[in-house]
Image 1: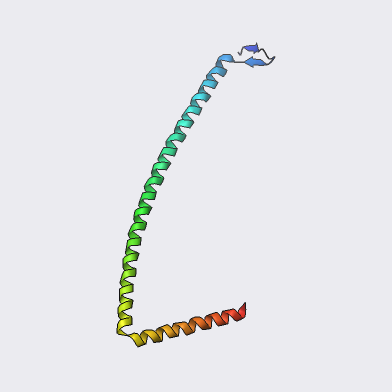
Image 2: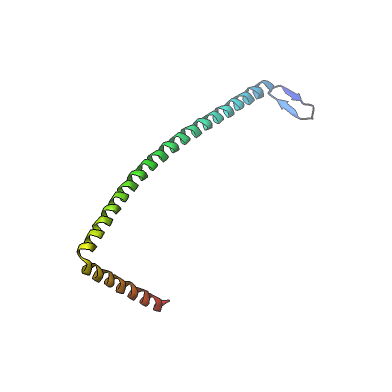
Length: 110
């Protein structure tokens, strides 16, 4: 059995005790959801920070390997050109002719 009560604004309120209990449960659930959201944000932030640190380390390692490889190739190229100057000129001229032909033929299509 419910107790019907007329409120000051003319509305009928039923189940005062049950309504209060439900309201308290809803408030408690809201607080629990807010707390869980805060914990989830904390975990996500920590995970993102850790992932960023791993990515930074990986990029740094790869960058160092690429830099070392580029320096090695630079030294090898300089050495090859010094020991084979005529071959180097012929290769450079051949590449220049090929690039020129590609630009010329591409220019005719536009």
